Length: 237
Image 1: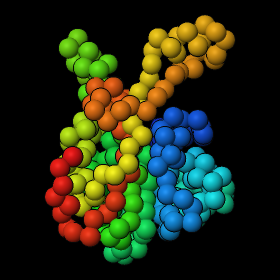
Image 2 (image 1 turned 180 degrees about the vertical axis):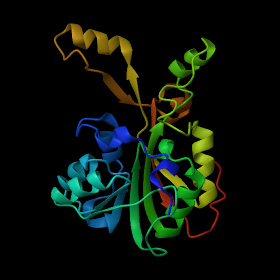
Image 3 (image 1 turned 90 degrees about the horizontal axis):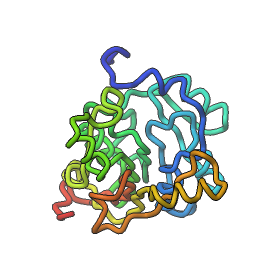
């Protein structure tokens, strides 16, 4: 087994604040199957269990998995089954053991992202579901950063950076078919007006981005995918 010095897990995730209002939780929650249809699923890289708690409010019962044992214990203490494992080195489940999984702001932290996606395809049954969220490295603000000589935000904390095409490729090649979207962006001008009107100083106006504009305007991709019954889905994005 890899030692902690060989993993991409970042110490800040072991001590991070427990926040329920991170925007990707709400948008990912829109894509969750109904609790009666979700089956057995796991939140991979569950952190302090925030998304699991939000899902539980809608009737879901799920398991958490996180690299940090302290996070797994916190999730267990909150009433959800949990375990600790390194997503870079394989998943501790048998083939087809899961009906679904969530990967919320996690894949960008995984050096061996292709290996993780292949493992998800192995452990999620054919016809099962996967929800993935991750930053869009070619959002228009990132393009400006590049033109002005700056690296992507959070380099060294994020190890992989995805465009719509590269994210689709890694998922489709593993056997997942995209079929639901809630990618979101931020409206800076409206956010400023809302704050002037009395909203909190950190308030932001966010919206679901229409798919034709996803590459340019989505700050975060939020996708739901279905596990194909074929080894390779072979469908264009």
